[in-house]
Figure 1 (tube, rainbow, N blue to C red):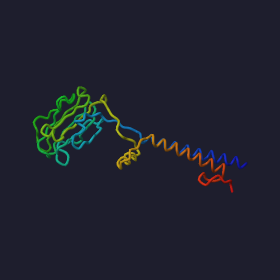
Figure 2: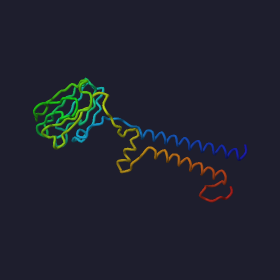
Figure 3: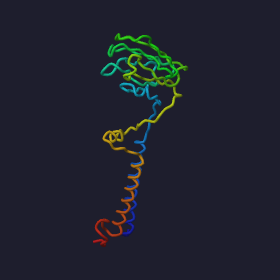
Figure 4: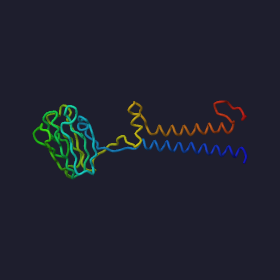
Length: 220
């Protein structure tokens, strides 16, 4: 087998490895770009204290704490997505004073109303959502509406949604936490650049017998 044949085989193997690396990077990019959906909550509901979210679809019942948070001025989970037919139970913690559950004016299809504010720990209010409640409802605690005791429920599948950051790798979110915004197409561009540099390096190795950084001397 000639030296040229060996060189060509080496070049093909190197290029193949670079392509595989690019494919892996692209796959990683796809994982990073994976998205999840969440109901498109009205701003008043999404800005409620604590701000926790639970996707409770597929569950027959769900419990929401009334008087949650450090000061007892929140609903937890604050935002809940349920199926029609689910029974929602609001349970009072006894913290933060007297609370109630009531749909804000014009806040959506579900007519939530637990009555007068109550401060008793263990008090509960149950509401079974039906098809008439389908959509998104914004509710609040009337005595504490001014201090952010707001929340929301989404009922059924036919609700407006928004994409939220997801993906199984976790590393894009970690990078975002330290202030670096990561876009999936950057990963693809980096992979393409890496392939190009690999081809240039291999070309110089085969043609001149040395690295592109050391000049154009012949093979020793």
